[in-house]
Amino acid sequence: MLLVPYEPARTEIRVVNSRFIASLEPVESAEEARAFLARIRAEFPDASHHVPAYVLGGGNTTADYCSDDGEPSGTAGRPLLAVLKGSGLGDAAIVVTRYFGGTLLGTGGLVKAYSEAGKAVLAAARRAALVETGRFELDLPYRLFDRFQVLAGELGAVIAERSFGEGVRLAVDLSLAAREDFETAVTALTAGAVRPRLVSTRFARVPV
Figure: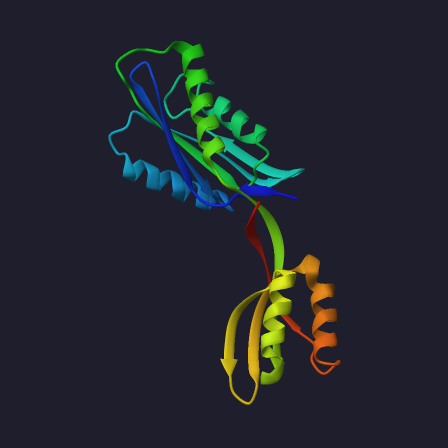
């Protein structure tokens, strides 16, 4: 199961008068990660450095990137990426924005500061599981609608759309892991008269 950030997060630490603002964002591609970095640069245009690191995918299918953005080589991007990869999260980008406080931190001090900034925002971030979900459509008679709503709730299904005509037409989102149970329950509820139709699939972030 791949863990990803559920939503953006931000924290700030101070080290010898320098400010380190760590921003985290869920991303699904290098393009999204670059766009996130561009937004942070625009938000803090007067900062000394914007150090990025991101990890895409999870397990054995990962891509990653980091940059020191003008800090001494190996003192910023690599430590930040190591912290991110050590968290176990995939599809995540972090940008640490530094406002120089007037005192040089040295190479060891920079490594520690960027690592601590990354750890702080990761500790604040809510996590989610990346789950494959399906959109199912079905038509029900009105007399079964209330009972179906109870059934859907028990199986973790979400009624995304509904329309009322001669009957009730529904679009339902559900984890594909629960598909068999859902189809069996609908078959039992309708005495075999209705079978849900899978019309699309996608990956969704589910809080854990």
